Length: 191
Length: 191
DNA sequence: CGACTGTGAATGAATGTTCATTCCTTGCCA
DNA sequence: TGGCAAGGAATGAACATTCATTCACAGTCG
Image 1 (cartoon, each protein chain N blue to C red):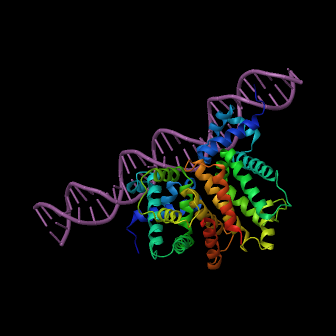
Image 2: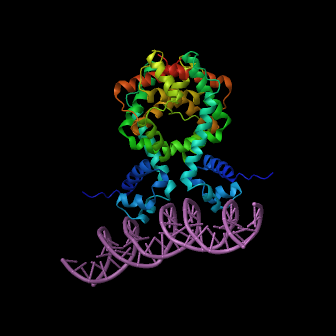
Image 3: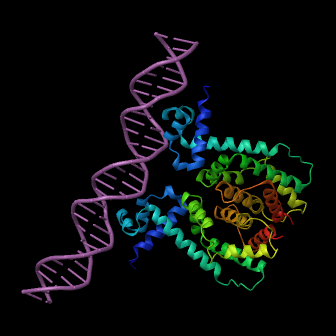
């Protein structure tokens, strides 16, 4: 079976190589080889390496956001909605460890830091479920009255640390363990 | 005033450059220039770049551990000891943002992952205050009954996320805010 | 005291490698 | 045959590391 979709092949190869070896361990030539394409061809589809990386991140973020929204019900109680989002996030990252590794690298690089800065300064993006959930929780005095970034740190800091431990093989996660941990995150943010 | 201590100068320059620009943004030539030394000289003091980086990490870890131990009283209640360690860690990292950035980079690199793996597999290092504190808490049923790495994730995930936000300028920390957040971490790990 | 010499620290140009990116060539299909 | 996608060798920049050479100085001897 042939793949005529070289753009997709290139992105997939880059994703896997970068996830496993980091940005600097994934030279364009290696990406090309893994994608079954020649080095020059990549530049027919992406302006340069940076553009390729940014495109990849955009795509992954889109996927994650989509999977968080499925089954999310605005009318449920806050705690339930929080646990839904957190566990959907965990499930996604568990199912896609490669995406997780890529995103981690991305957000620790200058690319990701700039992106985040732009988002904080830019107008509050309406479709940010997390932000609106937390703002609602503070207003209703269900959550601790802390600045948003700190609530995010309390909620997602542990989740990402847990996923890191799992991906590197320091722990083996199962549903019970995950559920307990996510509830512990809730204990951290709730009043 | 002359500095005859070139080894120290080199480490300082490398620390600052790596913290600010990452491992790959800190070529040896740049480190040499910042240290007021020629490129070749670095190799009189360090076998290669990797050795320099590992030495740096060892030194910083030593500093941190020392500063955590001062004022730590084994006879105090568990909660108090936890808060002491957590806030000493925060204070250290706040006072030394450059060390924080370096350590983050290090632990996200293959060097750090291997180091951590060795430590988990190796014999439980007796002088690991965190590990013994948490083990005691589980035994006394004060802490949640979760595998150690998960308790670490719950306790330190938020702290590191908070420091990151602070260093990048996404929040401005003060004592009250920090105290509240650390107590929230405790809420996360306690039963 | 002053010339001589041995030593090891320091230098920085040179080396060899690894990249991202370019661009000329090839060959396919309409 | 014309146009365009794909290939891959070529280019040049950026690196880590090496090494022949310089230099400062302490010790020695006349």
